Image 1 (cartoon, helix red, strand yellow):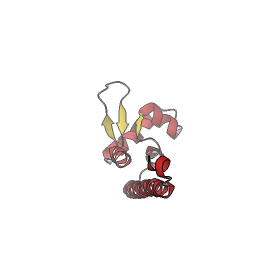
Image 2 (cartoon, rainbow, N blue to C red):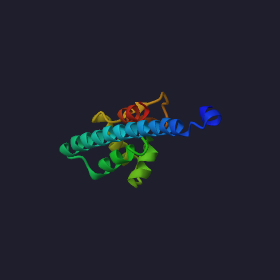
Image 3 (tube, rainbow, N blue to C red):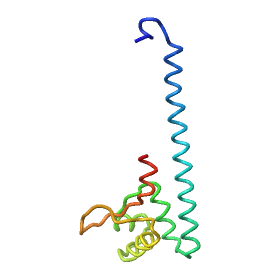
Length: 120
C-alpha cells in the first residue's frame, strides 16, 4: 500500500529481499542437514559391507523418501521382487526405512528422518 500511495519502493524491495535471504538461509541449513544424514547413513552401510544395490537405493531415498518394493525394483533395475525386497529390508534393519501407512498389500516404506528435515 505504501508503494502505491507514497512510492516506497526501497522499503518494499528491502522487505522482499529480506524474505528471499531468510528462505535461502533455510534452504542451506536443510541441505546441510540432508547432506550430513546421507553421509552418516552411507558410512553406516559401508562399514556393514552393504551391497552397491543397497547404496543405490539409499541414494534414491534423497530424491523420493517413500517407496514400495516395486519402486525399489525399478530403481535398482532388478527383475526379482525378492532382490528388491531384501535390499529394502537391509535399510529397514539399519533403521533408515520404516513401514509407512497401514496397508497390508503394496506396503510402503519411508525414510522418516529425511521427511522430517524436508518438512521442518
